[in-house]
Length: 200
Image 1: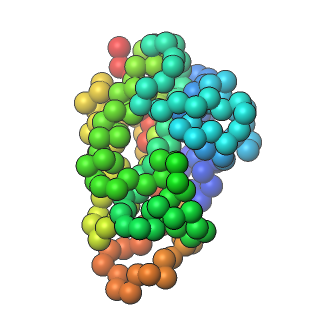
Image 2: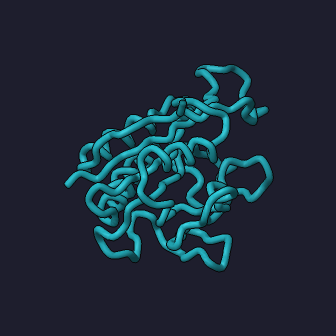
């Protein structure tokens, strides 16, 4: 039996592929270090805003150099954090962004606008009936709860996607910032994998 929860993201992705996809993942527009592909073929088309490998093409996932309506399976793992302050400009271990990468947005408005542009771009490149797998995490930033996952679902439905399935990735532990003196929100120990299908 395939369950909706798990502690291993590679197992969750495998379950999604088995349940919903005709093909392995063909496009990853936010490749980063490629952690999704330890146990499966790497996509033919790999992109990132700041590539870390020679085979990854530099591109913004909101404007991909790909033809429309060509692909069966795409995965999107975009940034989801919100934060501000001097630490975002410093290249030090333990900071919440690496300079030059889309690791964190300065405002919730920037985060929302990113998904409002990235998700429709996935719709554009997918063939009719194609599948978008999206990993996303709710986050607390700047003292506020940002319901990124809700923004993502609403944006996908508006773009024309059909919501097919939901998986929850549970974490046994998460790094905790030493700067937080008084906790105001529950520490998030889960991420979502959403499965969307492109309608006709």
